[in-house]
View 1 (cartoon, one colour):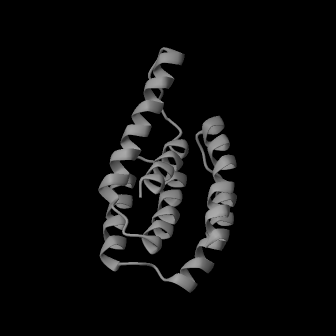
View 2: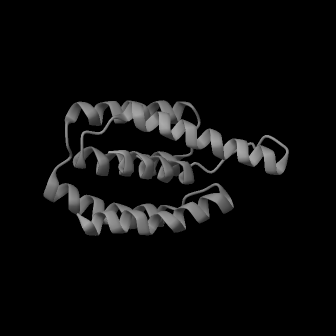
Length: 136
């Protein structure tokens, strides 16, 4: 489990930097994160099926809302990790994600003095998971 959490937080830095620079998350980072995740899921299981169904519906909604596929893939991997580890509340996580994304958008508007066409969602995703994990 320590290996999974270490790799999750270690790979978060290059993902955040790349997403902030180009608003894209390369698949290579997601593949690197998927390897320990799959190994962990084989050992520990996937968690409650009804939670996975709700997480899947949130991902489908995200696709319809125009969230980038790199962010959707990152959320899918993260949902699998957290669903197998604890009693994961998607509503609390989404509220934290919305607050983090709003703060990121507000900071960008204040600095650039214009509304961006796209924003990097990876920093908000990792911030939401860090805050959710810390409050647990």
